[in-house]
Length: 159
Image (cartoon, rainbow, N blue to C red; front, side):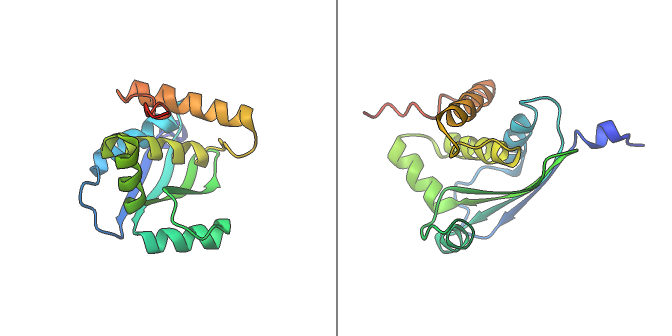
């Protein structure tokens, strides 16, 4: 039987495919990246839905929830942080694929970064509230991604 401590450390990850998913990482990869981000500040559990969307849905969500009329790479919708993280992530596959190519990254590395980035947002991290908060979030992303074997996502090698 599960105790409250073991229940709070579980990750219930639902992955929804609402677009062409050619080249998209596997569900186990998404799970590993989300778990790494949840565990970054201690053992946490989560109930997260990750939805892969096309550009039209990505633009609609960004416009409706952020007032920005373009498709963005990842949107985070946090609902609860304690005792477990509960939230949704919408990742726009065409934007992720385009950015990975532009930045000279593998699609897998860019997806890993965006899943970690989104899960950190679900936990209350925010890079839009000031330079110190942005630096704190980026440092945490670098730490988590390095632990997963990925290079610094902010060092694209481009001037």
